[in-house]
Length: 148
Image (cartoon, rainbow, N blue to C red):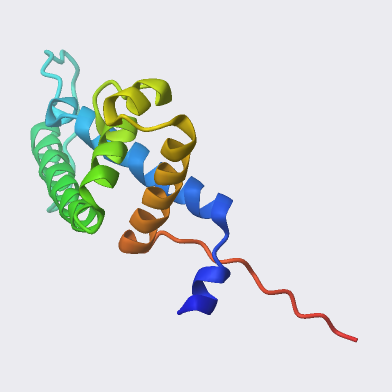
């Protein structure tokens, strides 16, 4: 296990988990209203389709909306399981820095958590790595084989 942790690519792992955190915010901000069909009158003659497949914009919008909601539910369940593996202060730090509607600046989080800036950065790095491990988002370095 220790060997695996030594082979983690820190920068790539941090980028991977930050992408996941951005995806969390995206899911929080998107609403099913985006998938609602536009209802406007059409005054054009459309040729009939000679297939058994009937597609209406309302049905397609409903399917997209349901699929989006299911995808959000799966993502939030998966993400919350990983987040629960962090300590209370680490969860608070991640929430303030990444998950709020308006994330706080680092100096504001330091004040809120009553920690020094140096300790904040150490705590944030640790929390991001732990979250990446809990969610399976860690990235390992490729071992190069030297041929002689």
